[in-house]
Image (cartoon, rainbow, N blue to C red; front, top):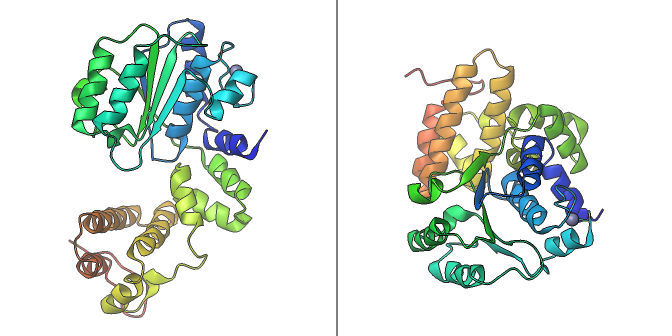
Length: 301
Ligand SMILES: [Zn+2]
């Protein structure tokens, strides 16, 4: 098995429910016209969408390793004529969907169906979604659509209602830990992150990329905190998130840690919405105000 497939296997470990669903749907011989997997970008949802697409075009309906047969292998490497993958890089506009539409009207060349995969479907513009909707409302008989997206929120309700949708479920702690170990994270740290990742491999990888001793939260004062965070606000928020997620699992004050996590998320959104980093981080630092000479304490309000 090649590295890429091994990687895919790791990402979808623990997602056996959906693989069982895939087998059942394909054995019935009538896969749904449109399926969606919801989960963080670049994670299991994307992989499941691709596994499903391959399984539909493979005559043996292999669900799993991409090298199960020659068709699966070609589907994985992008040379199967009945499988088209669109991956979001910025917005997905109407032109991309029009191309799919033209293709959808042609008969499949090899497989029983033509499968269209849109990874990051939430990046479709409203026009693009409406164009997809027109296809889904009157689907050519031999087509399947398959989406991945972080969640249903940014899809039009009319599109959502046409989808058979699944949410990627949290990964068991032991699977998070073994995933990290396979990524070369040392055992102690994998255990710590396993607690803090809350069942998300994406989050676990984000935490694993942080330097081992994240000391930002121990800075002595609000201004010192802000100064220590400013050089790399996004990374600092990741460090804080790791700290408080770990604390929430271990601590006597899980509610306080939960509040801290909500404030961190607010700061992250402020930054995304172009609030000045100093202002966003200051607001966070004040909330996570530091006890004299000690660690952070909770804002009482
Ligand atoms: Zn196959």
